[in-house]
Image (cartoon, rainbow over all chains, first blue to last red; front, side, top):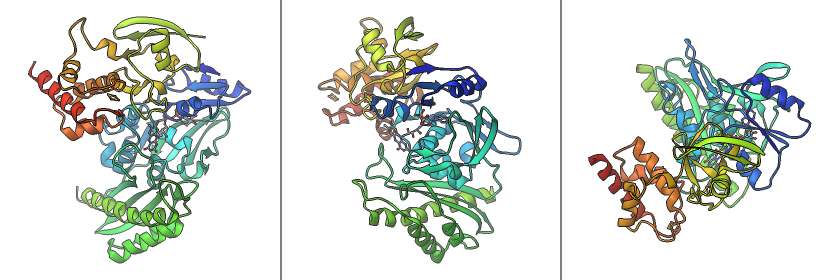
Length: 289
Length: 156
Ligand SMILES: Cc1cc2nc3c(=O)[nH]c(=O)nc-3n(C[C@@H](O)[C@@H](O)[C@H](O)COP(=O)(O)OP(=O)(O)OC[C@H]3O[C@@H](n4cnc5c(N)ncnc54)[C@H](O)[C@@H]3O)c2cc1C
Ligand code: FES
Ligand code: FES
């Protein structure tokens, strides 16, 4: 294995392109190093992206859209003025990941590219309608987060493609998101199920919504039926029950030591209700603000 | 081999390492700084905690090569000569260690906490240290020692 820390995006892309064998990009390394050391794989080249300009930056456009560089560690997100106000669910999902030590290194983009079905950052990004900017030798492209997830541990990024940032759209008044997960303890565990809800309210009515579930299928899911269940409602009990039912209907979980199929399916509905209530309350605060 | 130049506990340091080598292995095997310990090698236990540009990280999950031009602090840098850091003294006073394998990592992590939050609540201490496992003490003495060190550090 070789290691390189190119100073420009072009150099990184050229290096990745020219290497015949396996290439891995290195952001915070909290997945890469674990996999490397467990002997799961040994790439021929590890390309550290942290020296590339922009990878550690968070910026907000004049219109209010956010660009989060691919290697920005979790601990930074909560310190960026205005980010938590716009995207509380994204920030809380990222902050749930690992310990203080992991927060110093782990990134949203790494969480996405590792493509674990149980990743905490992914449902929040999917519900947010986040897109990723992707650079390759043939140029730049953007993709919806939900569209690059293929299977456990698998994205459809082409060899040598680098995600340069996560991009979040500008917020309209009365919108907010929320992410909740269930784990058997309070810290340092992998989600048994997780749910992110992103919605906009106007005069107490939900006008748009996106609902995403984690750890209940081979990839993180976007559940359009769950959004339909609450749109046009004031999130009354009927709407919440419909939401939970739609989420449970979308679950295709596995049985493992952390949870059974029945438990995961049930808890997904519970989390969806609670995340929707939380997002709704936040959105109302932001409507009046 | 990769040539790495970095600062360790304030001193400019250089070494050669294999591209696969972790910072933990480089510190222990090349620089003879054996304070940081390997408990798990997978980021779960925190025994290998060090500061990388002032932030606590698991050195088992950092490549040694990533150290280029960075500043590293380890438990070896905490005492000033014979004068122990207040955290180190309080750990002794409170008997906040038994076998001691977790201690260097916890001291380093706690130091980073107190630099950011001089007056942490008990639950802030517990959450901050959630990535530092101790199989001996049951944590209470560790938490008390950190809180007590915070009191002393605030008054000086
Ligand atoms: C102790 C511990 C606890 C954890 N707890 C949680 C948890 O509670 N919830 C959770 O969701 N996760 C958890 N994780 C995993 C989480 O830390 C990672 O998924 C992290 O978010 C990945 O980010 P990174 O920057 O460390 O990525 P890396 O490890 O650097 O990279 C991850 C993957 O993404 C690829 N990659 C990275 N950057 C790019 C890029 N710019 N372009 C293309 N590909 C790229 C890499 O090649 C690799 O395949 C935990 C990990 C540890 C060690
Ligand atoms: S040895 Fe690094 S976290 Fe356990
Ligand atoms: S004192 Fe033994 S692990 Fe903490």
